[in-house]
Amino acid sequence: QVQLVESGGGLVESGGSLRLSCAASGSIFSINYMGWYRQAPGKQRELVAIIDSGDSTTYADSVKGRFTISRDNAKNTSYLQMNSLKPEDTAVHYCNANIHPRAFSVRSVYWGQGTQVTVSS
Image (cartoon, rainbow, N blue to C red; front, side):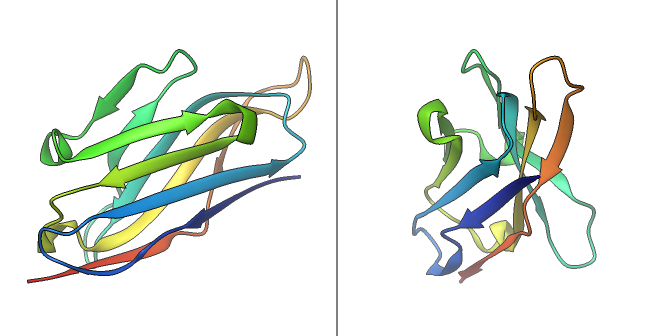
């Protein structure tokens, strides 16, 4: 079994910062990409940022220059540093990871339960 657990969400004023963490645990042989998504009320889930096994990153245009994704492979953990937060960043933030549970197994995508980020104006 593989589990992803997010932490670090909360309420912050506009212009503030938050750091989200996503820790993967359980049967893990290797992790390919790790990503962060978000879903605001009434909207579809959208990609925020993704980092691959070579540390290449991709960001949504709306967060470029404000958010930074990183990973600690020794801890099977990804991070999303969010600076200059805006009210429109308010959403439930989810992490995911593309994981080999065992050697020679098929990779699967796993999701965390989500953490609420609320930015007040």
